Each structure stands twice: as C-alpha cells, then as structure tokens.
Length: 332
Image 1 (cartoon, rainbow, N blue to C red):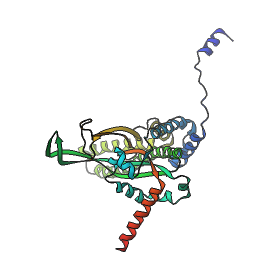
Image 2 (cartoon, rainbow, N blue to C red):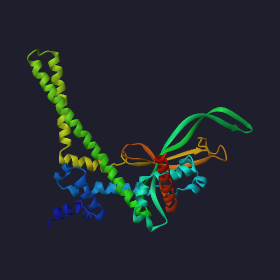
Image 3 (cartoon, rainbow, N blue to C red):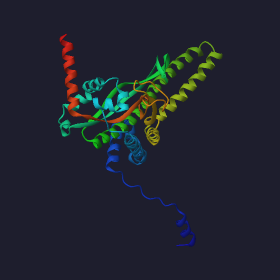
Image 4 (cartoon, rainbow, N blue to C red):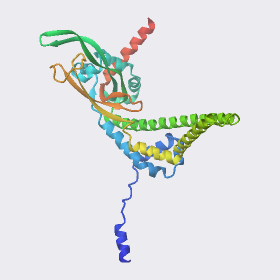
C-alpha cells in the first residue's frame, strides 16, 4: 500500500454503524407503515429513512408524558386541602359528578382490570377559563364595592385512560401522544388532497373559460385567465409532487424531527384567592400561587394536564349516584 493510500484511508470519515431498531421502534415503524398512509408503503428504504426521526418523536413523547405532574389525589378531601383541586372544581360535588359521568371511568370500573388495586390513575385534563365581574375587595379595614375582578375557573374536566398501574398509564399515554402526532400529519395530508381536488377542478374551469375566450377575444381578459391558469397548474404540480411516496416520507421525517408545534407542554402559573379571584402573588395570606402545565395537541387548544389518583370505592359510589339521578329523572 502506498503512502498516499495510507494517508487517504486515515483521512476517510469513519461512521459507526447504526444500532438495529429496538422492539418499540420496530413496532412503531410497522404501525406507521400500515395505518398512517398507504402511499408511504411505496417509498424506498422506509424503515431506514424513518427510523431516526420516528425514534426522536418517541423520545419526545416520552419526555412530554414524563413531565406531567402528579399523581394528585382527586376526591372530596383533596377539594378541601389542595388549592389546585379546589380551583379545578366549583364544589366538592362536582368532583363526584365528573367521576360518575365519565364514560372512561364507567368502562374501566366494569372491567376486571379495575379490581387489581383499591385506587387507579388517569390523565386529568381541563380547560382554563377566565371571566370578568364586579366584586368586593378589602383594603385594610376598608371594603370596596364594584371592583373589577378576573375570576379563574375550569371547564371540560375529564379523566383519560384509567389504569391501576401508574407505569402502565404512562406507557399508554406515550402511545397516545405518538398517535396524536401521526394523526396531525394525516390531517395535513387530507388538507393537501382536498387542495389537489380543488386545484384540479379550478384548472378544468379555467381551461374551459379560455376555450370560450379564444373564439371571442385575445385581449386582456385572455391574458389574465392564461396567467391564472399557469399559477393554478404550477401549484397543482407542486401539491401532486408533495403527495408522491418519497417526498411524503421525507415530509413525515421532517415533521417527526420537529414535533413541538403539534404537541407541547407549556408551564403556567397564576395566583388566586379561595374564591378564584386572580390576585398579585403575596398580596394576601389567603392567596395561593398555582403552577401547572398546559398541553397543546392536535386542536391547539390548551388544557391543564396532570396525573390523577382516584379511590376506586369513591369512583364506584359516584357512578352509582349518577345512575340513580338519571333513573329518577327518567321516572319524573
């Protein structure tokens, strides 16, 4: 071997061979191939090209779920003792109503899986809301009336994926987070296909219109429609190219490399008194500062998200009570 060959070999970059995909990644690749979009199956080197971005998305989803606070007890005692639970529900009975009306809780309690422990865990979500009102404010010994106030309250409280095992819950939530990302990408593809159909129809209309104009005039109207047809056709070709298998797989890889716009946790804090009036932190001994993350997913609406711990007996009582209310209503 010559001196120059030796130097050339020394200067060649060395790349460690990528480790083979683990079971979780292989399962996710198979899931994407079968369910996300049939067009992807025709892309070359599917597993090789998607393994790294999909692995990144799996790790990202695990990080999002791992950052959820809790588990926090959700029951009538927590309503009295925990400022965040107190803010989440207007009354202690609202906790029972949420448990009793939850179809996810009902289905879980009806399954043998619920018998494994005397409590279960779930993801609790709720939408943060504010309203304005005029109220009273104490300033020392003076009480002021008709003071503008902002009131914090929550709506759409729901429990998701009840599970006796906390780690089992986290695993299921990681799966759902990844599914949410892929459904967001599917929605993007649906929008592109809808645009393609609209552009095809618009192109056909423009061509028909130009056929009519050619027999009448070659003036400005003909030039305007010709230019518009060229723009429509150019965009149509661009959309059609985007929806081809290889560009589609590249787009999916880019999306999974940067999933933050489609799924993210954002920290939020607010200081309120026991009536839910938003105040300055430390303005009064009764003021509590609440800190919780808000989850944004497919619809981009923010939801408070936390892990909850629910007593199974209390949930069963709540379900029975709500059923009794429904029966009474039907009898009346």
